[in-house]
Image 1 (tube, helix red, strand yellow):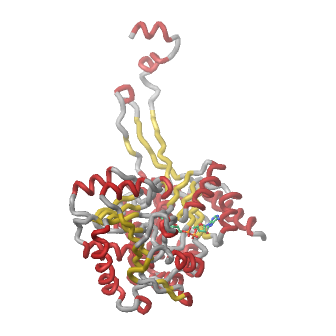
Image 2: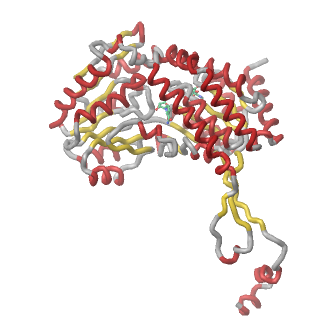
Length: 457
Ligand code: NAD
């Protein structure tokens, strides 16, 4: 059987199941979510091994970002499912007081979840939680780049979830293109780079499928002169160098006044020594670049500016040390695209307002960070910029607040998820009115002939 036929058949099977209404049943959704939680519970070791194989992901980072975050989100959905699936009454004007007016969340239908490789378990399972909770059938297409994790997802999903409702399809560009262009979905949830995001949106337009695009981009981090540099740098290091910088919301570059650059670099040296020791290559807490292509892409960026910390590479292991770069100009190659690796350029700005202008001159980022003590500065920074998410005096942790919407704006994406937002992302909010056939005399004032009645009012 050709790939195309195999995929089309699998998708048709799911579409047929969706028509039976099986996934709409709230008890069924609850059971599938419980099974998903069991999948995460019973296979922790296998998950940790797979992400270690793919990215050398440290155990603690993986436990936090690939397991705990996902389990929390499943538990949150289970705890709130009854409330989310109930009809919601709405405020109505006087004329509708006798009617029953409410909204119900109905599933969109058949969903396609396309995952990325950097958090290969989280980025496939978290959207799936929303798809299940909202009552959809779903195809899951893990990223082929994180091979061991994709294989594991493909092995475990059929063991725990209803195979007629949820299926994993493996593959790269050819298979994904086939799913996008030769199959009909009601919802496409894509995580990855923006170039492919545009292709996803084009394909979705053919069927007017709803899309969520979880993309990336350069997330700036402004460090103000008045902030505690030691604390700022530790928090930046954690967010930037976890998973060797391959995190969509990792701070991409630092903006600071030249007066504090030297002190910042000193703090970076100390924090990195404290985190990873003399040689980060020997640290069990430091990941590797996912493959040779990305290793070489990152290595070529080392020519921008000068390495103030780090800069070591080892191709045999796809290793790049945590690196802080100075003397970087806004026009340097490293400032063109998202770094998505452990290289942190520092770009100088003359003032707080220049930092805001620098950010507003560029694409709207997925995350925006500021380290400052002055509350009014934080407020002004937030009000004068636009970004998917905003975080003051820390990095990345906003992504773990389960009830906060997580998603981008403009070039960094559209739509959002996590918690109730995931449920909403896979639902259609149907506006409903239930009237009675009584009170016809009141209703009849809207019927023609109009002229006579308007006079009577
Ligand atoms: P990737 O290469 O794994 O691609 C993502 C998915 O798109 C994969 O499933 C892949 O098979 C598919 N794909 C790739 N090329 C395709 C094509 N030509 N046609 C159809 N499908 C195709 O991941 P990536 O793009 O390298 O991901 C990195 C980017 O993702 C970064 O920009 C990062 O910031 C972003 N990201 C965003 C989030 C978020 O939640 N917003 C999370 C993780 C990563």
